[in-house]
Length: 405
Image (cartoon, rainbow, N blue to C red; front, top):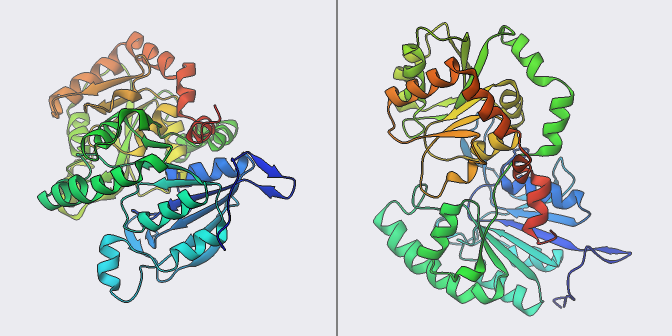
């Protein structure tokens, strides 16, 4: 029989810690990364909760490319919480993979008996029986949104059939039983209002951020200094970092062109580039990387990316948004970002510049100003290390996600 729950508290009794189940069934879950889907469970576990993640088989391979795990199962994450991976339901496996109906999902939810459900995007068809269970058992439910009109809803079918019809109707059906819908950027809060027509009072902004406990460990171990030595970067050289998925949407090629154009600057500098080069841009990128001022280090694990953030003096992400933006801010680094409406939350009072023209000339101009005017950079650095950067710490975000502060 399904279990009735009383009002949630951190410890319900001496023998029973309050249980949080995270559902990662709308997209991927990648072990040992620093995405929100990893960090919230990690910090909820550290806060004393009993934590389980129930996730799809969608993951990344060792080269950082999307893949499907061969089978489901249960295991412990390195941060001490349980992970359950579920395959799509059979028969009609192909159809169910499209609309996201899972094998034995409700069986696992009943067994885990959550006090709190944290749903990472509710765009999976099994959301309906999940919410029926939550309502019947007085489970406190939160749902976030990682979707916007930049990264999704691009085709007519995606926008008008799925987001503006199916997920909108389901959102209206379940909205009274979900405490808050979190947009992980202000733009995604707007998406919840526009695409799903959810009421303002149900929508809150819950930023993404950086693993601050790991960050402090790396700072204490002088990882930035050691990495500079490993890359043979001189002590007086100014390090600019860029990377991620290297395709034309991320505009890394524009940064490479701009750096190659800078012949005279007051500071010696190196541009360090990381990431996987998309096949369609490989020929061009390979040619642009051929410069004495550019170091290409290839694909990096999520943990290693944090090392590189700490090593750098300036970070530039000139294309579409990624979680690396918030990690850069949380790491206290001055940055240059492409301007997007609803993405300016990464500006904490002057720590960053925004690019508005998507041009080589604009990037070159901003870089030269920062390289040649010490006051410009020192002001950005001071703002980047203000107390506001701590709002991007997952130790803070994890508490806000379940309203403990």
